[in-house]
Length: 381
Image 1 (cartoon, rainbow, N blue to C red):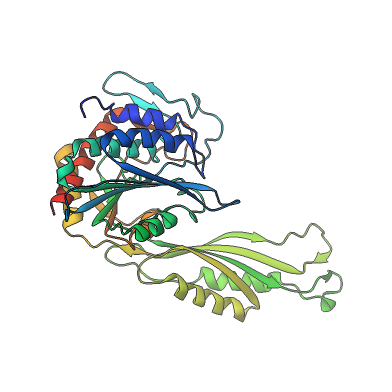
Image 2 (cartoon, one colour; image 1 turned 90 degrees about the vertical axis):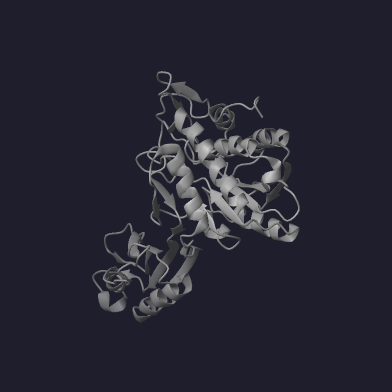
């Protein structure tokens, strides 16, 4: 255990493995090589086919005494494309700064290879007799997420694996490490709306049927909706019009159809299916048809022993009282909440998905200690 590299060293090794979503191969080899010496049995499998796959997934477990509690770390090794304009190569990790204030640069440093490295260091610090530890790691969180954590959950259920609680290492901190953890997330749904008409010459409108006015009226009704006012744990749900398309390049043609897309982020006062029924009812009144995808339902892990253990671990290592929040986008916690109580906590998120993504080296070591504290407390019950 004393010979284990630092969290920063492990993060560098993971960053050096390009893993734009969906990730397979080398980056999983790297994580397996980090976990196997710690006594973890590593199970890897590939799920799905193009265009959303193949996706590699990893489930690793180190079993404690019979009947002991089971704590799971969860996260993803895939990253978003780096894009252009980096100060250094995005998959060649580089440390810059003075000792004690170094930053580690590279795609995935924050989201979320740095957190996974901290989890490995935390696992090394936890005695095997403390209980069962596992890693639930996917290569498809940043993409469609069709063959990632969903497939891992199916694998775990078939194998009879049942964690008592799970910590997802998403970058939840805002201004400094420890200031925010997520105990829930809003749901997410996207809708594609089409209004059909009849094309014709603009000089002879009586021979055509322009769908655009009906689409505009439909969108105006949707935009005027107040879905709710929020509640104790969630902000108000919001509906946003994200695209309008006609595709008409001619100046003298009434188009045959008009389309739009809307996105709804909703709290636990709604279900995705109820919202879909409401949107379809409004669309149908204006002659529209709707296709929708529900990416995830809203959920809340009620504050209790698990969140209290995390708060105490953060406070012990940073002196900060974290805010328990449900803000932000979706994550794989939306799937894991069906398995066991789940909370998200990780690094500061200011540079995630940006060029020159970077994490403070010191934060990686503090995060590893926080993860070790909360895991040991959760395993103790």
